[in-house]
Image 1 (tube, helix red, strand yellow):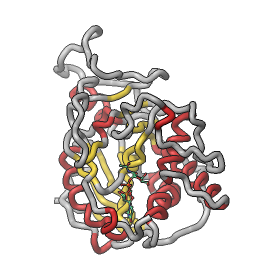
Image 2 (cartoon, rainbow, N blue to C red):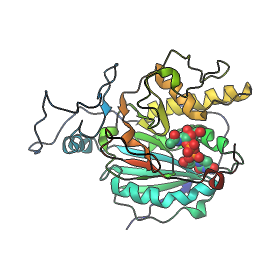
Image 3 (cartoon, protein in one colour):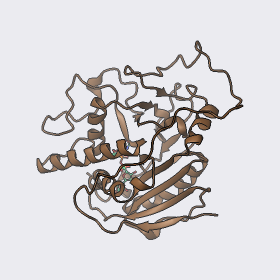
Image 4 (cartoon, rainbow, N blue to C red):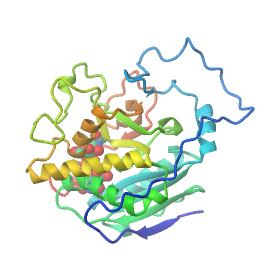
Length: 322
Ligand code: UD2
């Protein structure tokens, strides 16, 4: 049995800290173990009901576009350390238990994983039995009176925590919403330099003008009406530590500029994330399987749901209404 708790990160320096250190992570060649048995891949057959490649030639990942046996064999040889950054501030600590318990069942099983839990209620972090090689690190952050400050503040605290601590402990980083549970394999097929998830509500939107991007030119997150590829969710995204560091820091800095100009992007950090990913394309796009939600009907192209957002009473869990 392993609980692996550590409590750190009580100092709260201002600024962006020292970014001169770099992660030692170097992706290896795609080496597979000898003698592995798996279905022969076909050149002619694959998913035909959905597109599985972007127009910049990045994989668009759906169930049926990868073989978990092959993917796992390759990535287990690399043995990466995977950080999951989640925030549970105020009443959101109630979501921790189910998130971690289901994460242990489905998220990067047999890989080295650390859940970094940023919370203002350390005492409410549940004791969950973790598999070997997996642990929880608790980082304390201040309480908030506006939920917008929590969602945006994630970019600031993640920037500082990567600088101070996570850089020397992880090779890949995922940022995730806590109010969700894992339902099915979420594995190494999701790993890349920068992986972003299609928002379930907009993945079939035919006209980019209907994406809920920030449309006010006064905001740093502004995207003109005739630009855009996809609408990505900010609830699940990940990549190499240094690429993720660049991106969380970007969102933090852009939101600071917005704050000085008295504007808050329409969907907070999600707007800044979408702006960045338009001009810095993700190296993998993960389908909406990687984040669905409990209250939406499942569409026929979604064969499995890997994470589902829990239906919640916003008025009850958030510190403010709007
Ligand atoms: C959407 C996005 C979310 C973020 C937000 C910004 C999806 C599924 N999620 O979520 O990623 O971009 O919009 O408007 O599209 N939190 C706390 N305490 C709080 C409030 C939030 O810990 O008081 C954390 C917690 O980890 C939560 C996350 O912030 O999961 C996102 O907040 P939310 O779930 O209230 O936002 P939601 O559902 O509108």
